Image (cartoon, rainbow, N blue to C red; front, side, top):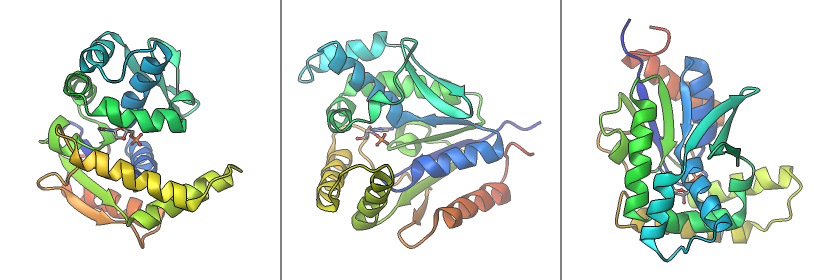
Length: 228
Ligand code: DC
C-alpha cells in the first residue's frame, strides 16, 4: 500500500485553514495537526510560569522542556502541554497577542519544526500553520495556501464571536488581524509566504463547502490518499 500523504495548509489568520484541515483529515482518515495550537500552548505556559517574553533563551529552553501532544476526545482534537489539557485556555486574546512574539524566536521554531516533522514522518497527516509548506515539509505531497481579503477574514471572525454572544467590534477585530498579518509576514525566520509549488486558493467569495470540495477533489485526483 502506498505511503499516505502529507498535506500542508498555510495561510493568514481567519482564512479558514482549521475548519478545512479538520474536515479534510476526517474525510481521509488522516491525523490533524494544528501547529498554531503548539505555539499557543507554549505561550500559555510561558505566561503561567512567568517566563520573560523578551528573552529568546528562556523561551527556547521552555520549548525544549515542554511536552506537547494532541489527543482525540469525542472526535475533537485537544492540546496537551505536559499532560495538561490547555485547549480552551490557549484561545484568549492575551495568548493570541503574545504568541506572535514567541513564534518569532528562532530557537522555539527550531524545536517545534522538529516535533512537527516527527508528527508527520509516517504521512497520513493534514498539518496547518504558517510555514508548513515552506519550512516544516517543503516536500509535502500537497501544499495549499488559503487566503481571503482582510475584511472578509475579520467579518468571519466577527460572526463567529457574535454567535458565541461575545461583545466585539468589527473594527478592533480588523485591526488585530492587520497587526497579526504584518507580524506573521515580516518576521525574520519562517515568515508567512506562499510555498513554491503551493496551490493558492482565494476563499473570499467561496463557501467553506466549495473550498473543501476543491481541495478534496485535487487530492483525490492527484494521488495518494487514505483510500488508495
Ligand atoms: O493559527 P493560529 O492563529 O492559532 O496561530 C497562532 C500564532 O502562531 C500566529 O500568530 C502565527 C503563529 N504560528 C506560526 O508562527 N507558525 C505556525 N506554523 C503556526 C502558527
